[in-house]
Each structure stands twice: as C-alpha cells, then as structure tokens.
Picture 1 (spheres, helix red, strand yellow):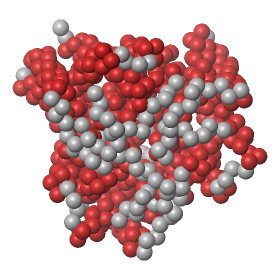
Picture 2: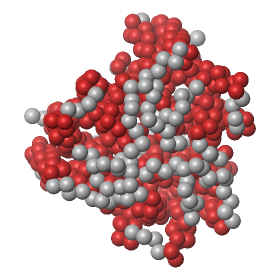
Picture 3: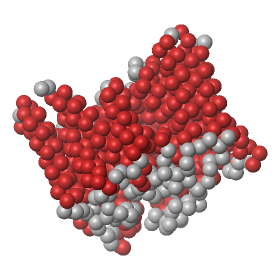
Picture 4: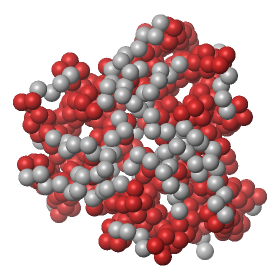
Length: 212
Length: 212
Length: 212
C-alpha cells in the first residue's frame, strides 16, 4: 500500500475522531447552537491540518480539496448535535477516540511535512501541531486555556509519535509505513497510560476539572 | 461589468462596513487605545479575507496588494475613534452596515474561492469564513465568545448567500453577477429578519447581552 | 555586509529575546508545564515571523527552514523553565530584552516584506505584525487581552521603526542597512522612554497590573 494512501486513510479516521470529540467538548463546555457545534467540530478536526498545509505550502489545504475531509468532519460533528450529552458509559470511548485522532494526526502530519521537503525537527513539530492544533483553536474559541499547555501527556505522546515516524524515514524511506505504525502505536499507548494512571503535569489555573 | 470588478467593489464596501462596526464593538466591549481601535477595526475588516486568500493560495492577500483595502479599513476604524460612542439613533444603522458587510463578504469570498478552482462545498465554506472570520478574530482578541458560535442567524445567512452564489455559477457561469446579487440580497434579508424578529439560537454563557 | 545577513542576524537575536520573555510571561501569568512553557516561548518568538512569511508567500516560513530559529527559540524558552521566577534584579533586563526583540523584528519584518515586493504601507504593517504577532498569540492562548491593544507605546515604536526602515529603502535602496539601524534604534528608544516615563494609553479592563 502506498504511503500517501495510508496517510490519507489515517487522516480521515483522525478527522472523524476529532470532529466527534471536538463537538462534544463544545456542547459540554459552553452553550452553542447548531452552527457553533458544527463549526467547532469541523475546526477541531481540520484546524491542525490546515495550519500544517499552510506552513508547508500545500495550498489549498487538503481539507478543501479532498471532499471527504469536510463531509466526514461535518458528519462527526452532527453526531454530537443529535446526541447532545455523552452517555456516561461512552466517556471512555470518547477519550480513546481522541487518542486515536491524536496518534494518526501526529504521524500523518509529520509524514506530509517530510514529503514537502521539511527538515526532521520542523517535521516533528508540524506533526505535533497537526495533532494538537485543531483542539487548541477550539479551546481558544470557547475561552478555555488550551489543555495542551497544561496537560503534559497530550503534546508529549504526539511529539514521540512524530519523532518515531520521522527517524524511521530518515533511517530508511522504504520503512515509512512501519515507522508510521510504530509512531501511532507509541503515541496511542503513552496517551492511554497517561490517562489511566493520571500522569499529568500540574493543572493550570484555567482548568476547572480534569478533561476526563 | 466584469465579475472581478463587481467582487472588488463589493469587497471594499464590506471592508468599510466591517471596519466601522468592528472598531465600535471594540470601543464598547473593552477599553482600548487608538492602536487597539485601529487594529481591531482593520482585523475585523480584513481578517476574513486574509484567511480566505491564504487558504486558496492568493498570496500576498488582496488586503496587502490592493492599497484601497488597508486605507478604507483604517479610515472606517478612525471614525469609531473620533466618535467613540455610537449615538442611540445610529444603533440600527450599525447593525444594517454589519449586515451589508456580511452579505458582500459571503458572496465575494465564495466567488473568489471558485475563481481559484475550489470545489462548490469548500467555496461556500470559505465564503462564510470570509464573512465571519474577521469578527471572530476580533472577538477572540477582546475575550468574547465569538458571536458566530452562539447566534444562529449570523453564520446561516452567510452560508445561504454563498450557496446561492456558488450554485448559480455552477449552473451557468454567465449568470455569476446575478447569482452574486441574489446571494447578497438573500443574506441581507435573512440577517435583517433575524434581527427584527429576534430569531436567535440560545445565547451562550459568555454573552452578557444581545448584540443589538 | 549583505542586507539578508543583517536581517537574519537581527532576527535570531529577536527570536532569543522573545523566547525568553514569552516563556517568563507564561510562567508568571498562568500555571503551565514544560510543554506549555516551551510552546509559549517558541510561539512568542516565531509566531510573528510565521504570520509575516505566510502573508508574503515565503513558504515554508523561515522558522521551519532555518534550523537556528527553532533551536534558539527552544533554548530561550528552556531558560525560563529552569529559572522559573525572574529574580527581581533582572525584571529590568527582561523588559530591555523585549524591547530589543520588538525593534529587530519590526525592522527585519518590514525589510523582508519589501524584499518580497510588497508596497510600503503593507510592508510597514507587516513589520509591526512581525514584532507584536507572537506576543499577541501568546496572550490569546493564556487568556490575557493582548497588551498591544491596550498599551499604546508597544505597537507605536514598532510602527515607527518599520516606517523609518521602509522610507529609507524607498529613498535609496543602498541605504537599507542604515535605515534598518536607524529604525531599530528609534523603536528601542521610544519603547524604553515609554517604559521609563510610564507613557501609556489607558489600560484595559483585562490587565490586572502593568506589564513592568
């Protein structure tokens, strides 16, 4: 399977995961109408990738040229609109879904940055930006201090996943797919372990309650 | 009259309307000095178009290459600086002016996105982003929850106007001007009816008082 | 010495100054972990230049292609992480450092915009955006009203410095280096005089205490 196809499939999975999660967070943290829910879901899902694409010169961003991105993001956000409240039983699933989005975005973001000729360090950074950028814009819009600034085990797994991806490609480009898988799995596991054992940097003033 | 000329004339009208409105909002909602008033007026007026231009690859954005944009935006903001308080009698005019800006930006934004080869759905979205983007950045800077997220009849008329514009062009490119007029009029009427009859999605926690 | 080299050397000095200052501001104003400190330091240092580069079409931005930018920004931010609290004696030095960053960014930002073919007025504006953009993004992320909107003598010296730079080049391109020096010195002096004599536009609602 071609690397570009893997990256796209992963990206679309991440888009769905982040749209659902972003829209639910919006509903939970502030009172928004359907436009707000759709907008915040779509921004959470596509914001990080748009920043990455603008920075690497992939314009118009994939979010606007690949029709699947926008449709899947809107569909994911609509789920939150119709369900409104996450059932208690699904709280865990939402966090898992978010960890999936984080992992695939970190990896696919780093891969795309490399493909556009960026050096390893900026490619790793842009992988992490792809992963946390959308959620950060959402948090700014609903006036929360972005959780990425105050919760250590959110950005760090993204950076680890992007680093594994980039170093594998630097070592041998033919291993790109394996590097992506290893990077995504590492990111996912670190994030889940962080949630499970509550490994967290000190929380900020602006966070009234832990994210989970 | 050439479509590009219509788009530019509409855009400049919108720039003026949004600069005045943005600067007055800034004065009313927070204590800012002349730099703040100018900056917030200019950002409200040009922010949406700059986001659109970056996303479609029209770089440098029109706001920086067409000298009229910056001058008109600065001029509009200066009005708010010298007047400071909107006289009660003019409250309505400010809202009408804002609706004019919303309408022309939605239409001209969608047209420009189409002209740069974007598909219909992203072109409609970017039309709406052109219309609401500047005000959203202003609201973030002065720490208000962006009204577009909590006030349903602000983004919706922009989306309707952009949709009419895009569908008309898709049907027959020679009707572009008529599509633009129809789109702008529809957006304007929906926005004014929404204001008149107070058709509003539930207001958010962050909004202390209705915008009008 | 070639203008481009001067611009780069100045830029790197500014990057260091802003990274240190941005990270200290983050530590002081909110509770952030190491990721937050690094992110806010890097954003303060590189944010303005990235906005400028995206707007003039210099993509990928220098922050991602010139490896020194990212390393120096991360290094500057790490200082704040290890020191945590600015010793009282160094409060003044931090403000001086910030004024240095402001001056060199205003000048190098305006020069780069000119080099990419922008007209004088937008080049001056982008010079100022380069100077105040990173700090503004940082303030938005930590939920402060950006000080540039409420503190008159922050944006004004940047605008003066950029204007001197641009007008000198317009007068005679061979004087570019002298224009840059004159612009940076003027910006620095106005900023320091403003701090010394507390020349300040009225402070905004959101600022709990003066920046110094």
